[in-house]
Image 1 (cartoon, rainbow over the protein chains, first blue to last red):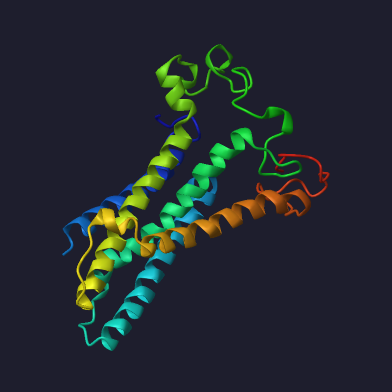
Image 2 (image 1 turned 180 degrees about the vertical axis):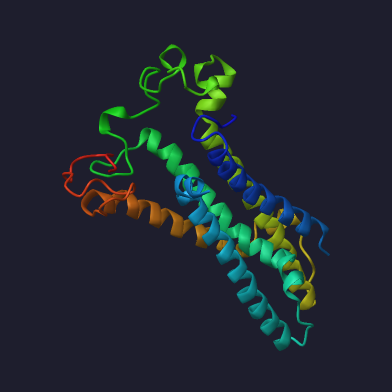
Length: 38
Length: 224
């Protein structure tokens, strides 16, 4: 599922990575927060 | 840099809006939370404490899950269901998974096709459903995290009122969880349905979300 060939070789991939980072980062953060909350 | 900004403007615009609104939500939420704390004689929370609370996480994930569900269902439904005249629908004669030729698979894949589109077997099945699979996984993940955040918050309220805490499994059956879930789902389905229907007769010149202004009302799926 590797991206590539969609643009300048780096730019489009960077935006794709940014979105994954925001989503997975948010999910992971609040999973940890809620599991460790008391 | 200018080329990067131009070529990725759509994604960067929405990423910027996302960050700005989450920050706005965190400040507004902190003030609302502290107003409640004040009423109940509790300690006010700092911004960081509030952002790292299950209350904020639950609110955030509640909205995330409904957005991912919206796209999951939209991606899936538009394989088999069409809407005559809609820009959100594919042509009426393309219902279903379509042929390998139409989908540029295996031998029909061009030289610069993704490698897994040229493959056969499991890798190709995985790749041809990758958008749906990822959206579905994100939906269930954010819905699960929402439920955990809401559950923690629910139990904190229970304890505050001298009532017993409930298990996570029990909370999943509670109306509190379902009212939070369904209030988000209904708005997504209304919005998707509205786009499917309104794009039959209404136009926005230049938008990829609209048919060309002069396209006839009966023309289906021809964004301009």
